[in-house]
Length: 87
Image (cartoon, rainbow, N blue to C red; front, side, top):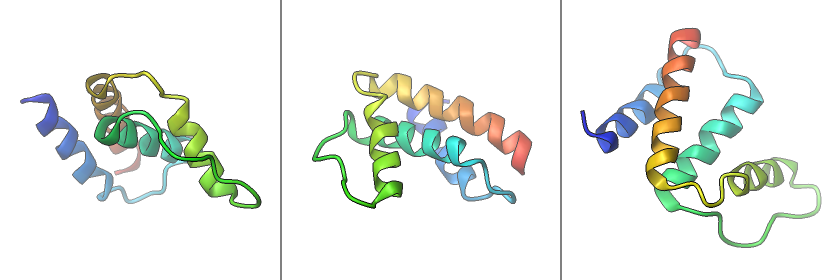
């Protein structure tokens, strides 16, 4: 299966989880998804009391420079692990 198809399948499977992953796992999924679909983070880091926005921005910024293909591979691998654990 082509990497793009594997990635899309993993994204679809993320909606089938019956248990909620940890906050760290959710941030990893978010950051890898954004890196795979949009590339490096853009825009200003949220400020003030937007703790959720800050955490998401920082998680994505931590992947800066990672290729879209590598981000897709990591997302698929993480989703495979989470699907086995939380399905």
